[in-house]
Length: 427
Image 1 (cartoon, rainbow, N blue to C red):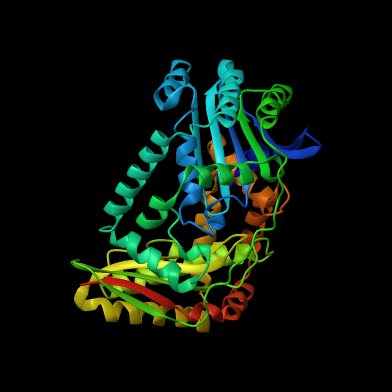
Image 2: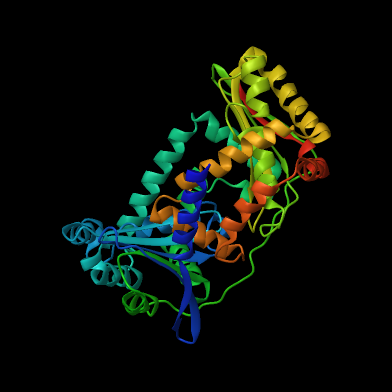
């Protein structure tokens, strides 16, 4: 335990090495999260645009992700291959990607190429490859990928569950879109999206590596200067359906794919989130030893694995889980999920379960922050959710001190997780 405590202390010091600053561009203060790490001569940069992910796909499903793929096609002047060759010759990587709530531009390079990486990113933002050929290429690749996923029954069941939980919202749509929606995307759609969302007022910069703050500000300012001011809009929050629904999809499958979910009444900055983290670990996140795994695999042999976890973000909060089972044991597996969750809410957990969970969460903490990328991601998420820099460290202390009666009182309060909806793919 002394070694673990010492490791946690050292990790806390590493995390505290991160700092929050800002870069003022065109009268807008863009937040900057920076951590210096000189162990390797590398620099990684992310420009994160908030309220710019798939949550904004209100007109055409998959547009945000499609725009990221267009930016990955290089500049119009050099083309996809020409731009890629320029980057490769200097060992620079530039990519665009999206999440539910964010759009991310990322660069990584050697320290000596940091200025060039920023220069190429500026060129990309000033001259995206808005061409019929890049549009056609991305459409063809995306439609091909979506067509292949029609036989990925985990993907099918997961999407169907989202429809049940978040009907008539952007969260009900697949983030990559549908074949029909992707076919309908035009260059004007892409241009409008990037013009609206890749703006200073939505940007947060995250930089880590072998660089100093002055160097970072100088180079990132050149990139940010290519962006318009734009405007930031509040992120809409969508509440999961609290009236249980079932959807059974018939496919040519040899197993049943069972996905389940419910509301989870918790705000993204809720002070009790650490209790949810512990509770859900015991219910279904913890693998072997978790309630779902114990009842479904060990005692009944209904599935190889069964998991559940809580998703809490600015745009939604819900519990979801999944398992695969034989066609003939589908109904029994579904009933078992309902029984396990009902008993969990009614009776809570045991002292031994709490102790084991504490040991795992505290003991495995070094593995979650061993790389700079992991530390920066954690610092960003704490900042994004409105927490102080040392929030993760404080959360671990709360977990360590958590009493059984307080955890069980928390679990019994969240009766909304009893309202389980099921999306099942079967034969």
